[in-house]
Image (cartoon, rainbow, N blue to C red; front, top):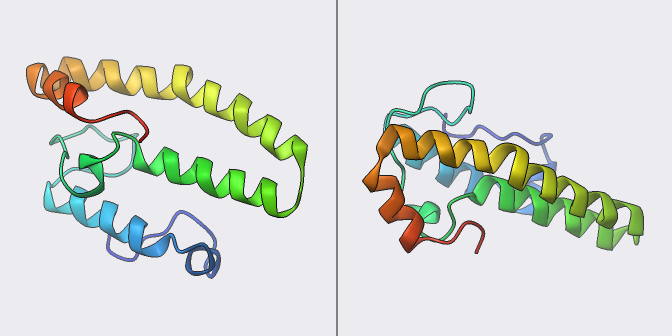
Length: 119
């Protein structure tokens, strides 16, 4: 899992995302739980970058997408970013959080109380 990057080769280095992606992959592999959302979560990861944000992967995606919109001066990208953020928050994150609460109970509720969703 180390070295895995969900973005095109070269783009991650340009954007500076490789260290963050590697750090997330290391945290997940150390906890013996998959990064992929399609596989069952084996452990609750609350250290490293997940000690600052409950959704650092989505946050990074939003920052990159927003940065591209600013660099190319495209209001459409920024408008679509807002729609994407709303869809992710209510269509993906809400379901993930409900699943994690069912799976980990009080441990996840304590984590939610300590760590913000985004920043």
